[in-house]
Image (cartoon, rainbow, N blue to C red; front, side, top):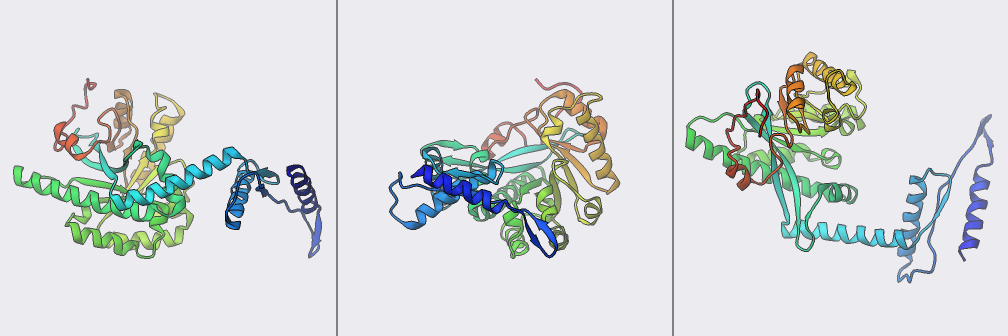
Amino acid sequence: HYDDAARIADHLLGTVRIPFALSGQELVTTASIGIAGSHIAYDKPEDVLRDADTALHRAKLRGKARYEVFDQDMHLKARQLMQLVTDLRLAIRNREFVVHYQPIISLKTGHVRGFEALIRWMHPERGMVSPVEFIPIAEESGLIVPIGQWVLLEACATMSRVSRELREQSGDSPCLMLSVNLSGKQFSQEDMFDQVKRVLDETGFPAQCLKLELTESVVMENAQTAVALLQRLKTLQVQISIDDFGTGYSSLSYLQRFPVDMLKIDRSFVSRMSHGSENMEIARTIVALAHSLDMKVVAEGVETFEQAQLLRDLGCEYAQGYYYAKPMDLEALRANGLFGKQFNLDIPLE
């Protein structure tokens, strides 16, 4: 009965809270407890443990040192989560993912200098599934590794083909930069270096035109290992960018050691920028820091003419956002003439 389980849980929590002495020091411990009951018809013992673990996870999220009972709401969410993981596995097999590309604009010339590759999932029944919904699940389940490998290969192959076409049309076309995000799980793969090298070899995409984007938290999680791997990746001549800069915690001594080419100002700062605002000063500091370390800066989430002008005044080199163009597939990029396009930076766009 739930009342009995709750009473036992309370007793256990109270017992483990009792201070005890260890090597002359007084210690206090706490516990979190997850409870699964028999109101759900279970077929296997491991299913009971799984649901108790789900309740335990909820107890930890709600502040720890407490108990939670697995309920119908959790049951529904657990089933939806399991279904989403199953659908993700099928999506990999059935090639349901597509890559969209968001243009990156030079704030000095107005030219489109490159594109960021962003994954989209075309679910056969649900239609377009937001990355916000499926990327965290892919991360947690480990499926982000094959998905990330596919994005890198697909984006490099596509942009290699586009660059070749542009050269044939205009004779000489500048290097189109391609930014591809690497997840924490991808970055920690032992064969990360070999994966990148293999993609470059297979697609013929110029290494110096590829920018690998890592979040600040991923590189700082194991900074010493990150330094070594980044230095190794740099031997391929690829560029390295730190994404979401300013939202995590960076040791400046490590930032100096990272062979990084670019810092990316997070959209949370850009969206609230105005003259004299705190976010404006944060952006100014990031630009100054990047330049002092011989790095360039790209701002993401630019949505207004004012934001673009403020960033330009700060000396930020590049910008991307809905003000210029939303992420779109290859055909839409062509239809909108975004390859080789030059924006007029001095007047607001219509």
